Image (cartoon, rainbow, N blue to C red; front, side, top):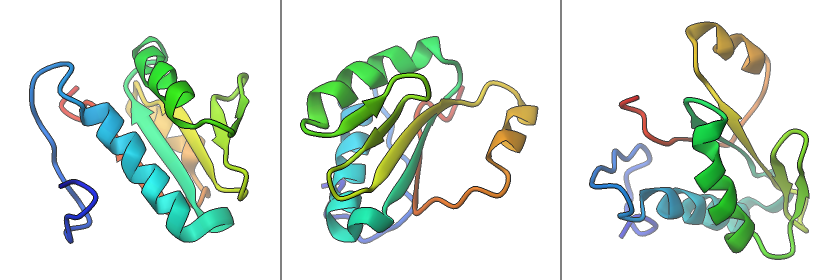
Length: 111
């Protein structure tokens, strides 16, 4: 249902373990499949430790992709990229100033 939804900005809620993170990663896979080397995604969580589960799921989903461990960026064979980053403080937004993304996912936005 997530991938078929015609609305661009989607709020997804529910209990822990309900598939929200996997759905977002799958949405980016769909995006990368459409746009190839032009797909540049940013997946945000509040802290780096909170990204550990996202990384585990991404490792399982992005088979054949290269992973830059230092920056936690995944590169598809097509050249598309997905960066997983923490966004703990308002000032962390400055780290992304001037960057261009075609897809942004905010996991646990209520935090």
